[in-house]
Image (cartoon, rainbow over all chains, first blue to last red; front, side, top):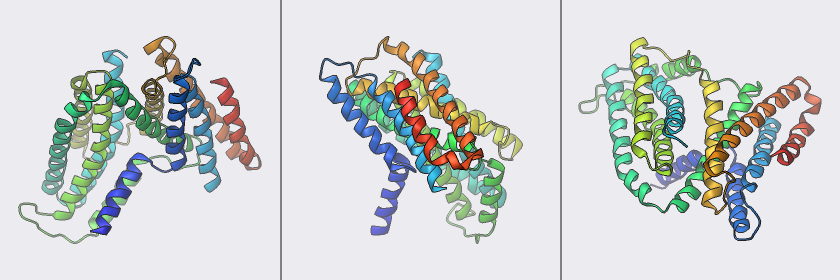
Amino acid sequence: MVRRIRAFGAFWYDFVVGDDWVVAVGVVIGLALTYALSRTAVPAWWLLPLVLALLLPFSLWRAARKR
Amino acid sequence: MGSGALFIAVFLACVVEAVEATTIVLAAGTARDWRSATSGMVGALAVLAIVVAALGPAVSALPLHALRLVVGALLLVFGLQWLRKAILRASGRKALHDEDKIFAEQLATAASQARRRAGLVPDWYGFTLSFKGVLLEGLEVVFIVLTFGANQHDIGLAAIAGACAVAVVAAVGVAIRSPLTRVPENSMKFVVGIMLAAFGTFWGAEGAGAHWPGADAALLVLIPAIAVFALGLVALMRRNAADPGRQETAVPAAASAAGKGS
């Protein structure tokens, strides 16, 4: 039973998070910051593209370093 | 996003998943038993249809902001993972997705397993191999159909696009009974990664309360900008692969440069 629950959890982790957990954490932080910024008078639309532009090369750098 | 763009985005994403599922079903049918493989595929499609029927109305009933926030987050994570793999493949740092090789490996594994009958299924291994393959790849298709469809208030059109993709790939797979190696899968994954990342960024930011300049037209800037950025990273990583001494420092440098650029 425990093994099945673990396998179920592992499947969803792999399905949602994938190979690099940093990407998932980075996206959640980016969305939280966007929400916080949207509560102020400052435009918030630019933050998530910036997060993407930082996260993707960082994730690639981590992958390249592992290989 | 117009109906045409919705159809194309969902169709392309679903073709990629359908090609992978077809390879598994073909391997199960060729190495084991066609009846069991087909039963597995039909069983998985039935489960997926139930999932769509159950989740479709539930997803549509969610408030648009909450839906866009959750869907945007997931699409952005998926898109970045797809793009990451596509860039690693395009720059020669990861082996290209090769349906022929995957088919040969699955054929060898499937052929080595003992045959066991279970009820009406002549070969249980062939059935489960096909069932699991179609179900797992199909879940991604279902996710794409539901999220794109719900966000555009047109799950019907998204479902038709997904069904068309599955039908076209399945028909070609059955006709030629070999892996669909001529489908430019690596290039398509690159394009789908860009689209998932762009829509994820757009909907995620909107769901979090941001307002895009130009509203939906912002996507017309976002998609090409991410494409150019990704292609730039491919070029950079190729150059670093040719000159390993620069590898440790060049990619983070690109990250900061790109951040200023966007």
